[in-house]
Image 1 (cartoon, rainbow, N blue to C red):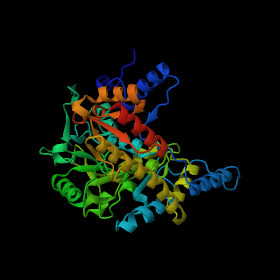
Image 2 (cartoon, rainbow, N blue to C red):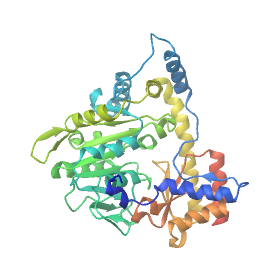
Image 3 (tube, rainbow, N blue to C red):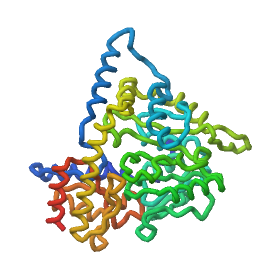
Image 4 (cartoon, helix red, strand yellow):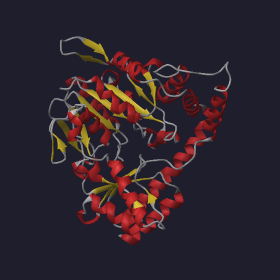
Length: 408
């Protein structure tokens, strides 16, 4: 019989969102006439903007002509897209990067899950709690997490984010090699201000830690004084990798395109004391295991960063922001405690009467046919909360809130 990676034996049976989908599917089978409204999984509902559609059509036509056909592309991404990202996302924020420090991929989830391959099996990893499950699960799959007991892994350092600390992680009081940060945060919807992010960068520089910074939701930040990139903090290019995605910014959940920024200043040490470039290691990893994001998708992504797309993108983001505003106001009118939603598409709702989060999920599904995401699925500190997303249509969002108010 084939021997397996034993680390998988300690994982929970279902990925969080697979379990949500299973329960929703069972409900629909029992109630085929009932319209279910999802405010759970963070998929977008608006179509791609016209600028992206035009670029897609043009790129598809190119693939039909021998002179413009593209086969295998560079694993790290085409130069035209890397340069467009550098000029649009970073230069206006005062961040100086080389285009070849940007690596194009099929999404931030893949990059975040894969980047841990560069670390030793004895690396000490710190994650916030609650947390996006990929950070935790990918390290557990690599055998780096230890033993799972009472919902936590023995070798992972957890940084609780609770109402008591305004859902902001405190600096670790023990030595860690890698820290995962997400701002604006998934699932709590909170954002790190410049002072907080500076403290994290300084701590990493002092203790030789690496920050893996998930900025997938930076487009939802409304206050321009808040950092959108960790590289706005001096010295961050010596201690941080940044991950971004076009999924929520431009509706690319079906196209799949994101990117990682791996500065050339980043280094790590081998067990025998040699110093290696993380940039070069990631390039080596991508060239070996990844054939690159499709050409037509990269041309579509390039259109996102052109001047004509700005107003089109802003209109879509405004719809989701308005949904978040409506949700926050409605929950508070119901007498519920709700957080996030201002600089994020996520609302972090405290369940009434300390109801367990999966019980709340089932109650909302059965009584209102509304889907949320139970906070316990994001970690022990998520118990007693539920995550709601602002990505449905305004009509469905309003209808779901009316149902919830009746159910509660």
